[in-house]
Length: 105
Image 1 (spheres, rainbow, N blue to C red):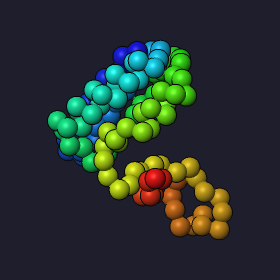
Image 2: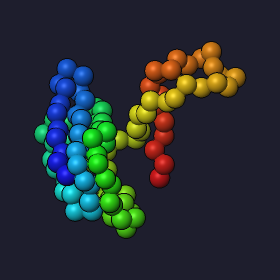
Image 3: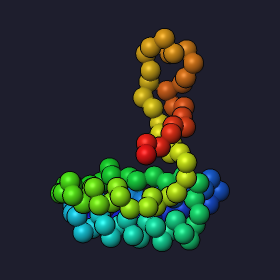
């Protein structure tokens, strides 16, 4: 696996793009490199791009181990782009709105 980092300084966005076969060791290594880039750039938003990943052979234990580590980007909330909503709230949100949600602890 190869991971590339790029930083949009005008918008404060750090992107990590993963390519190839993701394994336990490569994901752990990427996590540590991401921590260094966050320290160097101080981004306000982070994006993990898995669109060029060929295979994802990561064990459940590795996912648990990473989940118990301190977050790469500490903060009280994370951002996500929600899909179109077709409920009673349909008129309130557009399809591209970014909503702030609470982090599960």
